[in-house]
Length: 189
Image 1 (tube, rainbow, N blue to C red):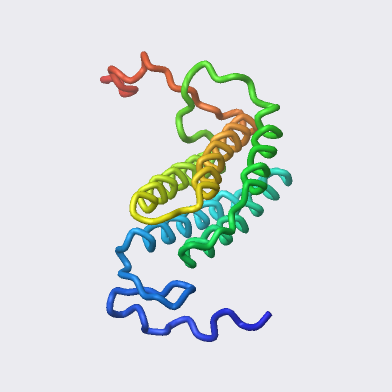
Image 2 (spheres, rainbow, N blue to C red):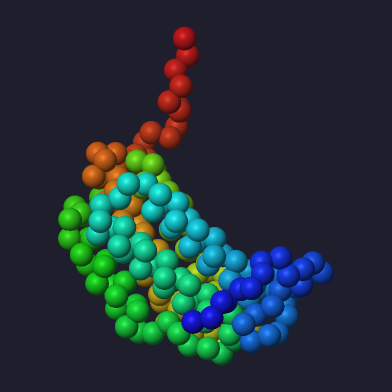
């Protein structure tokens, strides 16, 4: 494989446009570029999760997700291209099944947080949800691969489950307590 980028500072985006893989140029605030940027931000957030010491099976799963997000980015950079397949969604479903096996059923909502790794995973999950919303928006005006929408939806579910696994492993899963929000946690002296 040859070099993908021969130089990084091309200056071609200085006027507010960016190029797609098919050679077309789009405004940097166009919906397709917004989706691409959000998928990139999501992939970066997974990188933050990976910077925490993680169990090997979670690390392997998240690395696989990062590779899948690069494939999704390639699909988005070539309008009309289909690269995310039903089998890719199936892989997410398998991982969901494996990680869910260890978790007790939820009786309350989970507060995003817990351990640093779990908190970072919750943040990645929220960015994934935004990427999914932006892809839905793109689909209102352009044809998008339905498997890509499903892939992002299931991936956010997987990150929620992984965040729970990480928080529980650290003994720090925090459940929402609806009765606790009034009155605050600060007491007068």
